[in-house]
Image 1: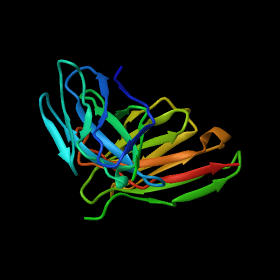
Image 2: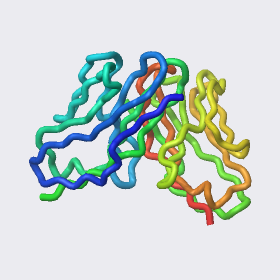
Image 3: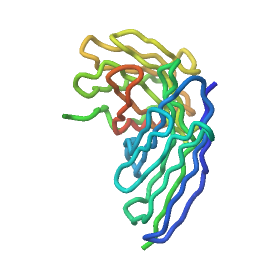
Image 4: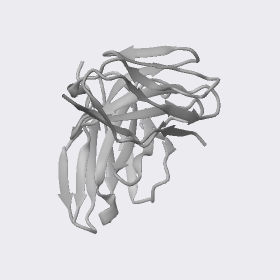
Length: 112
Length: 112
C-alpha cells in the first residue's frame, strides 16, 4: 500500500537558519503530494502541494519539489522564523483511493 | 469563504458511552473525510463520504460509523467508548476525491 516516510525530529534551529525536512514516499500510480502544518491546539493547515512530477510547490517561503525519480518531496526554507515552530506532515493522495496517507510528523522548534 | 467547522471542539466522556461529532465542509465541497490523530498512531484515515455515500473506510472497528447529509454536512459516531478512543478527530473537505483536502480545527475527545 501507500506509505510516507519523513524524518521524525525533533528539529531545533536558530532563527534565520536553513531548514530541510526529508520526505520519501511509496505509492502506486501518480499521487499528489502535500505538506501540512499543525500549530499547537489546532487542525492541519495546507502549506503547499504538487500534483505531478517536477512540480514545485511554494508558500510563505517554504518550497518542495516533486521528484519522481527519487520518490521524494523534501520541504525547505531558506530562513526560518520563531513563528514557523510547529509540526510538519508530509502526505500523499493516491490515485486509486480517497484518503490521505501521512508521515509521522516532524516537530520543528525555532529559537530566537 | 468559511472554512471547515467542527463541533464540539472538546468532549469528555466515560467508557461505554457513545459520542457524535459534527463537521460542516467548505461551501461547495461534496467530499468529507475523517481522520483520527493520536500520539502513538499518528494520523489515521477513518472514512470518506461523497454525496451521502461512504466510498472508503479505514481499518477501524465497527464502533466507528459515520454519515453524510444532503447538504454535505457529516457526522461520525463512536459507540461503546474505550480509553484508547481518546484522540483528536479531524474532518477534511474537498471538491472531489482527487482534490486537495482542507481540514477543520478538530474535536478533542477524552475518554475517562
